Picture 1 (cartoon, rainbow, N blue to C red):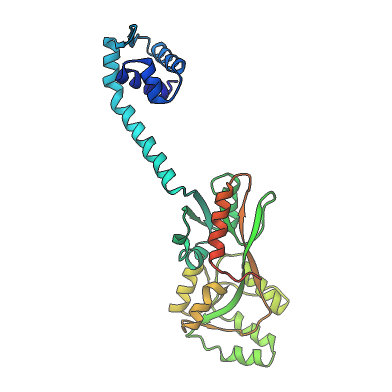
Picture 2: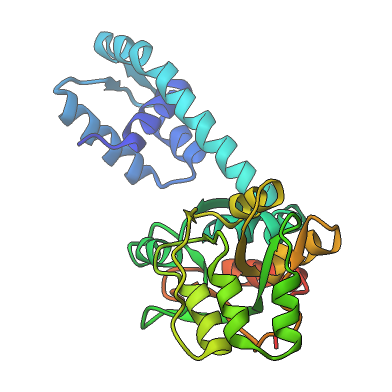
Length: 301
């Protein structure tokens, strides 16, 4: 395989006319210049210069070879120079981050421009994103649970889940049952509603139900939508109930777009983590991510 440095050396010899001049231009030793030229001549099978006492004179083949390669070589050198100068100018690491779409939209998007770094984001669920982290396709993952060994999990925030519903719902019966501490009637009312769920395993709903009713939920979701932003949009414009994180629903409740159906249920929460393999990221990337997440001022308890 031909080495690009051979072409660069050939160009320098051709333009300076001497091995010494080429060595000075390339900041390498004269023996290295001679070695590059010999390797290129061996590769092409042609003599490219006549060695004169004080001058390297290109042969006819050398002149033809120069006209054929000079444009491509100069273009590659320009790309190399521009890229190096850009890196030296901003010194910003490229960091690939996997995160739930709704977490990015609600929490990270308003703040990423404040951190001097190049970010490439990918959205998905923790299980899929962690697989990509293990393959080296991502540098960091915003994970909703710990799943892997040999991965660092730094707590980011504690999210609390709220039972919310459309403002069109008449929740008077539920409020009355809760006020009387009648969990049987409260459960009956909730079971009769149209439920929106993030996934078929009902992970969040199941945890909420176990905490408050001490049993598994007898709920069959009418809608399964793998995106909480879309679920909440559907609730705002339609009719139904769901359980979602506080950072997604609190503002909507305050604006009167959703109603909180249970004021003081037994606390249902989850810790969100920054996950990474410290063997595959630089200390600068870790600091960049910690700076970004620290700047969010999220409630970690």
